[in-house]
Image (cartoon, rainbow, N blue to C red; front, side):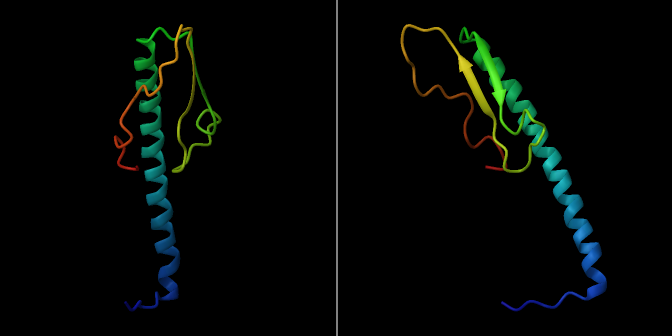
Length: 95
């Protein structure tokens, strides 16, 4: 594969296009995280949860394209139930 050299006059406009495109993608991903957090909270509310806490970069307002949702769930149960699926791992176009 051969690559053509980009003329120097075209470098700045191309970089601006890339920066703007990434900013839009980042905003889309932040919205997806926000909706996902709400969906997780709604599903957990049906499980008699005492407390739901979000933590990590999302809650610090530093969400980027590599951010996940860190969720702490406190429940009083007489047993341990593992493997509760809150949402499929492939619901996002970013996965």
